Image 1 (tube, rainbow, N blue to C red):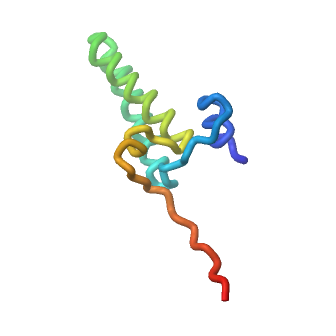
Image 2: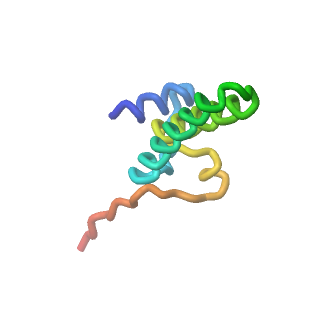
Image 3: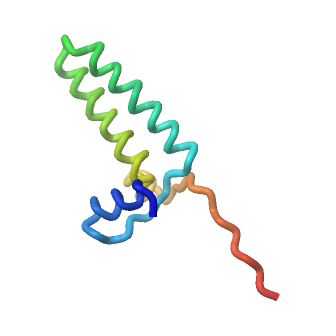
Amino acid sequence: MDIAQCYARRISGGGVVDANVGKTDAWIRGALFVVFLVLAAVFSGDPLISLIAALLALLFAATGLTRSCPLYTLLGVSTRARRSRPQHH
């Protein structure tokens, strides 16, 4: 079990959280985390913009690390690669 899975289990109260964010999607979310964190710092003179940017950064970090996106769950979307099952003859 990797760190993201442990974190997801801890957040969900010990239950299993369905991962629906793929590897590429998680990396993009990580990049967006950095972008919004920088925007929060740049716009520190405007508290509202800074707060919104910081909250978005936190959202992207959390969903990227846990590999679970509540919006994807609601929409039935998954960017996670499906593993092929072995065929039985």
